[in-house]
Image (cartoon, rainbow, N blue to C red; front, side):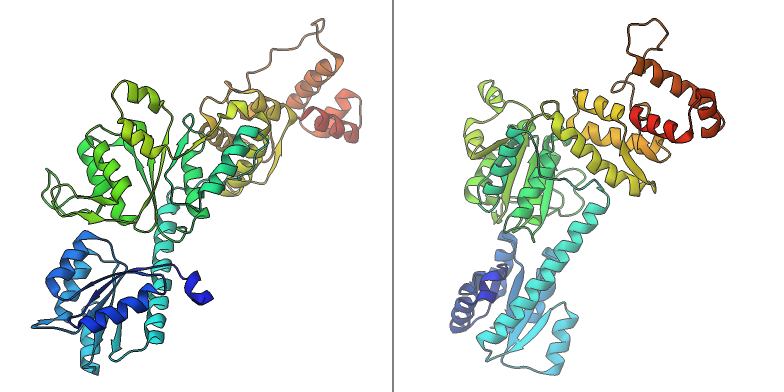
Length: 452
């Protein structure tokens, strides 16, 4: 197999042709290039397969016995609008090519065709599908702007977690991310997807606690029109939408018991049914799950199936809370400052020593999510330059008690307090320097020393 073949992502292909020899030849041609194929001989079986699995590409013969392949095109596209359809025929003409395109076909190929022609078409379709999926991911991300995450850490447990995530990424194994809320489980799940061979395919997120049992099952597996009150149209579900990619199930510990056996079946057999439909479908989707709860305790109390727990717990990655990673807080704060400064059209130079000390000393019960909110707030409140402790919430940097002569404090503390008070009332730096009896250069050094 050539290098170009091995580097091309695989497609799930449906072949619809009433000639057994064509089905076999085309199937072998595609299979040897790493694609997955299903072959049928008629319209009825083609529609049944399109209902059962998610395809990227369909080769449709123009004449299928007494049926027309052109009539099949709209039905396939109604069920799967993203499908790319290539019409194949021994009766090629301009008029049939135009009609095929008018009905939604992506390409047209005449019999007899060569393996090189098939490969050229599949490579072009692969490029188009990857581009469409990247655009969809970018559109989804526009409403979820967040700072880029740096995957480095000085904390041993966090480094172990990141190393394990990188090792697990190329595999097909289910990954279970554990850790307190806000520690970055969703971000790490997306990173695992991006580090895997599925990176060019969709990444979907389902938050298990946010929906009722009925709506959660529909969100996962989809539903048919009229399946329940309010189901006014068909929904393919997240599993189908993530075909070839990764589905992230956040807070899996809150998954209702009634849905757990259905998820277990999907993890084991890659099979599922939509709500209100008895048609069994298949999907090639990797699952990553996350929880901040003890699944072991949930198993003991009967709130979580033991067999599902063991199926999910193939590779477990524990994310430590931010309170255990004070050395990482400063790097993360600077990274977030680099994001929120330009977003708010401000030139930010960093943090004062007092502000950094407050950030490192705080317990961060909300972890990365809380740190993100604190830095964004500080940027909004700070005109420009250095973020001071005064720009941080009082819970993180309590207002210092007023220093008075005679208090058991060092001369540096007294000097800093005096300089701050003079600067607060002076009309200019020159006036402040004159009041303090020093020149402006000395005042500048003092301000830098005390982070004023």
